[in-house]
Image 1: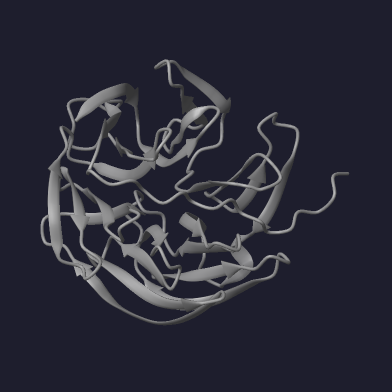
Image 2: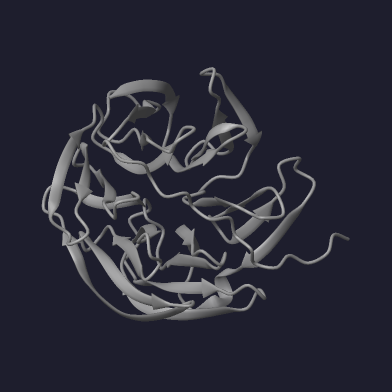
Length: 284
């Protein structure tokens, strides 16, 4: 596992961009950054903190999480809120999310400030439809984290870090069914995840110091050791999507800004995350 960059507080939301390289956020210090193919890091969107998820939008720019779900253009001239905290009475913000093949957003809301010591309250799973309307489709998610779809688009995987499980839902054309337990973890908390072409589910295990590669039935295929304990997320990238990027936070590391980006591989290509196609309002 090769280290590519370091010096961040809490790296999240890795997303491969064919033009810019690996996009990522620093939850604690703020901003969306890009690790280019030449190894240089540039800042694309400064300031915003708390971004736990990110996907491309078909109209350009990215959709980011945090206090709301918002579209942001790369030139910084346009911001549009796609989902706000009033979606439920308990939502205080949003963490990770993903898209289906049609471009709908599947989004997890948070019920408490994760690092504040506040009492824990469960959040929800929501769908933002292509016309911009949203619905709440599941509840009881104590700490929503990584999401991804199976290769056929019929199964949605969803980490609940506080319950130490990855949920799986049956999905049909945006309709979400009941969930069951796909995998359980005893040595850490399932965080961000991504899915490979062969159906393997790759899960960052926060405070477990590893990445778990799971078979489509939930059994363990491989465990990849990571030099830092707070492994926060994973994403496939590179020209053929065969590079696996692993990102970390700083907690339980040697200092408060040791969050790092690593690259490795698992011998199979990943699935590209489709761009969001939720309708945007016309620019003012």
